[in-house]
Amino acid sequence: MVSEPSRSAVKRERVRDYLMELVESCAPGDPIPSERTLCEQLGVSRPTLRSAVDELVTTGLLVREHGRGMFVARAKITQELAPARDAYRLPQASGTWASRVLEFTTVQAGARVGRRLHISPAAEITYIARLRLVDDEPMAIEYLHVPAAIVPGLSPQDMESGDFYDFLRERHGVRVHEAVQSIEPTVTNEEEARLIGVPVLSPALLFERLTKDDTGRPVEYVHSVYRGDRYRIVSRLALGDTPAAPGPPLSASQHHPGIPPGDLAARRGVPATTTGDVQPGT
Image 1 (cartoon, rainbow, N blue to C red):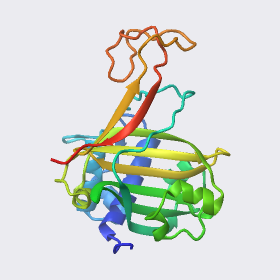
Image 2 (image 1 turned 90 degrees about the vertical axis):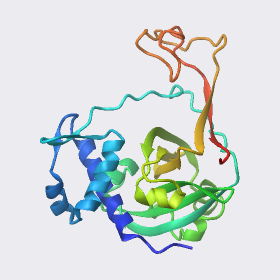
Image 3 (image 1 turned 30 degrees about the vertical axis):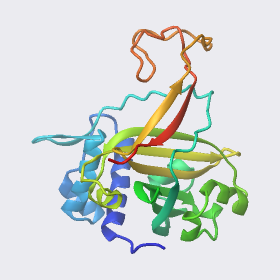
Image 4 (image 1 turned 120 degrees about the vertical axis):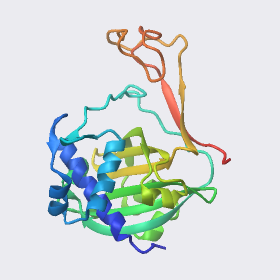
């Protein structure tokens, strides 16, 4: 059952998307408008804006300089866990998973989400916020954006029972084929902390995923916040006599995640599999 939509949560999500759009359209070091200007442009209160700005400052996308204002931060270092051509199947995380829909609505995609899904900013998307539970304990909040045209008749109940990708295949003939997902550290804001039962500003993992079907069409954009105290990512790396992948060896200044530079300098690719692991509660 869908809970009563939180106006503050909807506003914060809209402000977050607007700020992310600003960050992506600017170069590192570029200033962004003042809080007062942004409040006037977006029609939101100073606390609502500041909450979204604080989130982007904490995650390293914006920086504040006393007496000068806010600026776009330096680009983050990105390192793939496995070569792009060696995509792998992600094993199921441990525990019994369930979902509870928090919000279910149809809205315009907007510039940022529209760009990711390769649709017009004015095109309609189905926006779903849902709480993910493991063994009846809150574990994560997912914010899904799906082009409305590919899921006619989708209901909140569909998002609380079964597997969404199975539903896409069986009900709409959409076969998911590949996804690009990033993971980085973040902290929980006030509403996220309340929903997953942790203190405000608790460590968390931010997942962003773009999923495509077997024709290459984007069918889902998701960002999720997972509890940092209960969820971890485990990788299995093949470090034995694995033949080096074609191409020049890595230099001493390049390295695989978690492996000191130079230790595997002769290997361009380290085969890997990854799984999510729910840690026992304390």
